[in-house]
Image (cartoon, rainbow, N blue to C red; front, top):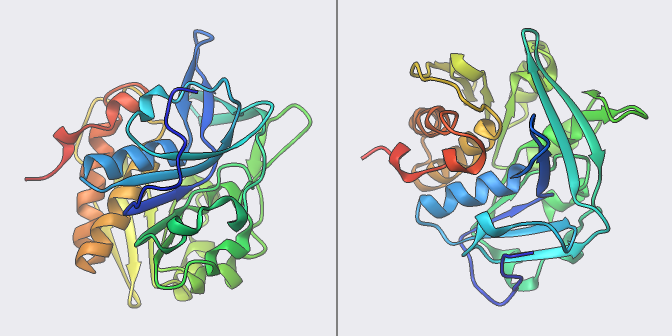
Length: 277
């Protein structure tokens, strides 16, 4: 593990969830997971980011150099394989690290201004959303919308706790793929969520707030690797929303950063050249 593990540094943006080792087509592993992309995005946006996660001691976190990390050791890191085809993405999970609770979050970090809960494999205790009094608590719930079979093939799962969790957070971002294109679910969730943003890939994003729905278009770009784009969008969106309290302009900014991120493989797509001047 090549990133610092510390809990005595004050931060501005805390993201919680598993880092992942993503298996790519040539049998190499690259760093993934919501927390990886989100923390890197926050760092680029000049916030002091920190991560609470669980991973193997052998995990290569060198791409997160400069970001303080508190890690619950696991025998294996959470490992995904993404396969892309004409019908979209098929995902497999091969290994799973350890679950996370508020006990894994250093006391100093529990009052961080922006808290981003980013479960990718049901690893976060849902009650954690109420554990950060005074913080701007944000959520990407994709990990609570997944289940997998004995072969690790991931499919959509019902999020039974949605209506108890959504009213307790400041903002939520998820992909239309997370609900298999079911706008009925999203419209119901939007009614009990302060701000809900739905990413739509090359079609941009839709933002729900104050009873209105706004469609945001994405620029045309050459897609090299779409993995992590939704996480880049989420982090950029949460940060701008915290700073401006303007969901629509925050959404436009997040679409711009996410669109830039897909032009490269892995973490290399998260760069400061996508920041609007």
